[in-house]
Image (tube, rainbow, N blue to C red; front, side, top):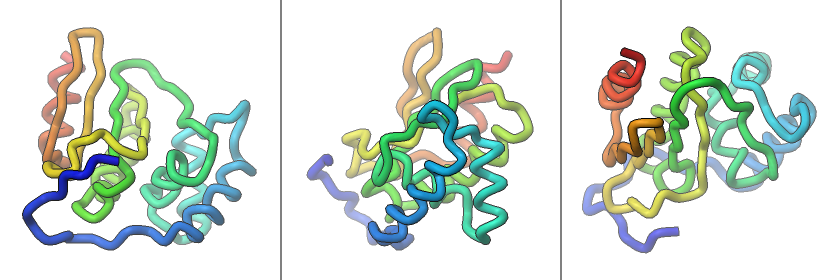
Length: 149
């Protein structure tokens, strides 16, 4: 992971590693060919009373699984250190948007090496890569809307 830390105080708590590991086991039960579909993940999260972001964070940190790909750009979201700075909120926002549009792939990653500008997101599209750091739901929506036109 990156060794740079934001100068501001953390705004969120990390999910405990043992919780991530147990959620990883739950994800393995719904995985098909080592991938987890966002609708199935959202349904699992709702059934268990947890935010979808917690399950997404478990993918890079506690499993060998990946999110099932969709069409359109790939949105890589740091689910490591960035958890302390709002990455889980971004992941929940992306799940809600994905359930409506399915026009991009959510890819949680352990680190994007932008720790000093957390939360970090990279939107990878045919036109190139866009780094959003610090990312917000509004900047994510703006980036994805601009790619949809």
